[in-house]
Image (cartoon, rainbow, N blue to C red; front, side):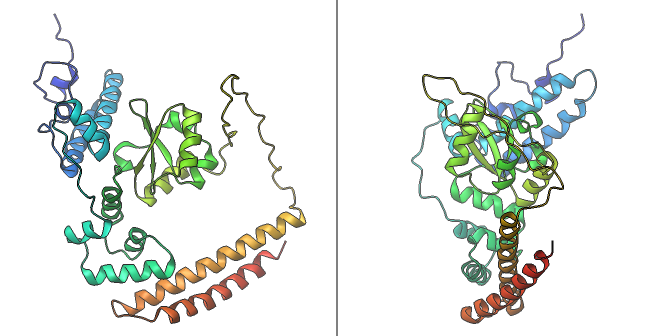
Length: 334
């Protein structure tokens, strides 16, 4: 009799015979392993091996196992979910101490020194950015390190989208406008929870709309801005058809489908009001970009030496006005 395929034993080399396997057994980790980098490393190695069977007679088993590996990795690299999962396996729950700040983690891991951190702080204050965005823009650390550190500091999981990717079926259920405006893409529905990848935590209104549309709670999984932009360009291009927003239905009545919004036919000229509005928005954008670029250039040119914030802002405003004026002139032509 031909031996039946056991993907856990034959593909992953797992000797445990009791099923189902827990996440640690599945990823071949020591019980209650806490090092996120080690968890991701084991996941990547096993993911790469299982993908060899993605085409051919075992493609269905391969995809099922890939999903299980991804769910295990996402759970064990999410501080909150891991604590709950470990408790379900009998681990004594320890009282959570004070979470380290983004800056404390950077310094503790020797990613940046104090002088570099001060430079990033000055840049963040002058331009109006969060400190992690300033560190990334000034290239004091790689985007991956910055986002992993930021995720740890706020208690959210980090995901390399190259490891898992976007769930194409779930993507069809997400409004393209929402995905583009809030820089988010669906990763998977894991244990009755929708995981949305984004460079920043989703705001409550967006979580609520997604919860109503998908009928399950939503949790943010952080990733790099470059990866989210690439994913949105692939799955939510501006040519994608828009979807009708979901409105909360009354308790006693089922939700009614709204009529699709009418779009302006391509090539139809803008009204005077629309033209003026678009020109104003473009001018404001040109001003803002001019200010950010001028301020950033001055800080980069100054190096670590202190610079006058008033002077930096003044020069930024002047450059912004020039950029805004140029943009206004260009957009005034119909």
